[in-house]
Image 1 (cartoon, rainbow, N blue to C red):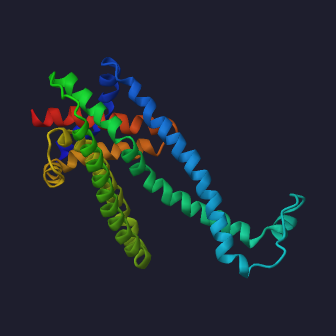
Image 2 (image 1 turned 60 degrees about the vertical axis):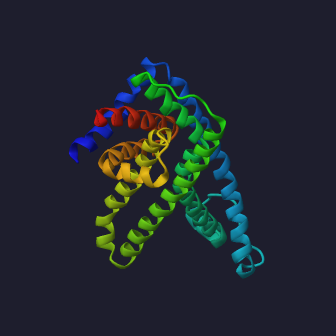
Length: 258
């Protein structure tokens, strides 16, 4: 257990050297472009539409003429002019952003699954010398499989997080203690996605892939925990996390299977 976990963590960091030594650094550009479009493009639209939705939901119950903030002359003036609608819109927008950030990791995995599959294949070729010929029908099948698997993992992860959230709602102290468990569950499914690119090349179906990754679950958690941590770092972490996780998953599994 400990060996697998440490291997997952260590290979995430040794991926830096492997990537640059083997001229694979170009793969860092793909996730950062996708992340910037997702975080700044999608989030801005979410905020706009969340405010529009909020206006539709509570607009009829608000006063006809809402006060506006005209200046910061005094704290009293600010409080007097601060509308309930504005506060509600801010809170609602924050909620939307938090939910979107949870989904964003899986959106990145789905959108860039072909890129990560090519990266994982390139890493294995550097390690073993084995190459995989490109076949269009297999490529399309793998993309569909990756989407199905990502949605499966997202659904299961959300069920666990909802369960922990419900427990925390009724027993706050227990919910606080279970928070690290929620992080480990998320890490497992992130690591799962990275390792599955290897199983995908070996033509395993989803059931076979699940069985294989369960065997190396602590390696998946170690790898996924690094992904979770670095992806939480704005800008820099967005392009490091997925590329190092995919690379580390391949080199780490190669070591464990040897």
